[in-house]
Image (cartoon, rainbow, N blue to C red; front, side, top):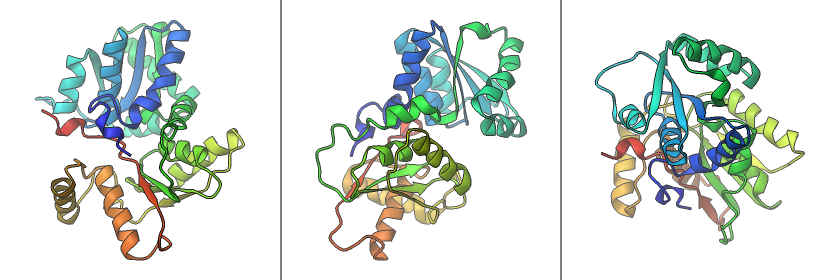
Length: 276
C-alpha cells in the first residue's frame, strides 16, 4: 500500500495523523501548530508544509543543538515558515515522555521565551501521537480492497499500528516492525488507544529489527534498502520503511507467517530527507 506516493513531504501516514489535529485547531480558532521532533523528523517536515498550505503558523521544538548549516529537513521546514526552537536532549526526553497536560505546561515557557503567544497555539505531540492522530490512522485502510491476512507497518510511537489494528477484520492481524528500542512505550500506547475506544484489534509488535534503535542502521540494512529500491523502483529508507521491509522478508524466510498468507505492507512514506 503506497502512502508514500501521495506527497513526499506532507503525505504518508503523517497526513492521516494531522488531518483531525488541524481540524481541531481550526475549531478552537488557533493560528499556530506547535509540535516536537528530531532534526530529521518526517513529522516536523510534514507539519511545516501542511501549515503553510493551511495558512497557519508553525513552531517546531527540535531535539539537540542548533547547528549550521541546516540539514535538508530543517532547512525546508524553515522555508515553509516554521520557527525552530532547539532544546537539549535531556530536556527533550522530559517533553517526549510527558502526558499532554504536562507537556503543554512545559512547552508554554519555551514559547513565551521566544515571544510566541501561547493563547494562539495548538499543541500536537511528537509524531502526531494523540487521540486525533489515532483517529486519522483508523482511516488508512478505508480504500483498501485487497484481501489480506496480515497488514504490516513500521512502528515508532505505535499510533499508526494502533490505527491499523483498530480497523482490520477479526481474522486479520496488524504487525508492527519497531524502528525504536522501546517496547513498553509503543505497546502501552497501542493498548491505551484500543482500550479507550473498547476496540480489540489483534496486533503483534516485532522488536527484532530495530538495528540498535531509532535512526540507527548498519551496512547490511543500508545495502538492503538500496537493492530493494533498485529492484522494485520503490524508494525506501533505513529509518522506518527499510526496517519494515527487511523485517517482513526475514520473517517470511523464517516461516513466521503461515504458508499461503496474504501480507499487505503499508509504505508510510518518510522519504522527505532524501529529496533535494
